[in-house]
Image (cartoon, rainbow, N blue to C red; front, side, top):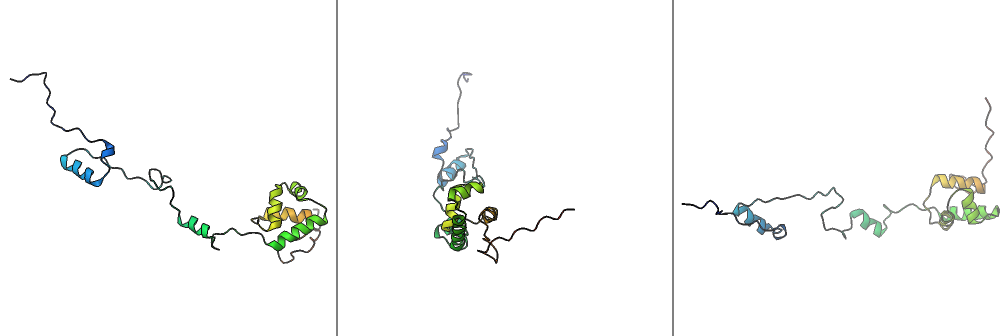
Length: 152
């Protein structure tokens, strides 16, 4: 004689996810026959899900030590002095020269101080404005006038 309104539950309530973080707790749940869900965190998601915020990568550590391998190439101080002399010979301020080549004045300041990262486009613009060669074997010599374009 059983009562139809009475319900008997023979399963234990599964522990919360926060309680099942240790390997021992997971193994115990498996022995009890509870459903255990495991997920492998992907390392390709930009470190999502990992708590490695302050881990320096190999390249960052090398850059911090400033080895020759990863250091940015800087413009030589000789070229910086040539830019400064050519600019002063044309009576241009750093700001005037920057305006003529459509760059920020800070770029000219960095190049003259030998801190700038060489960019052939910028160096070419500076060469045309100040009239001095800054690259190649004729560094410091006046730029030769370009031959006139032949007409066809």
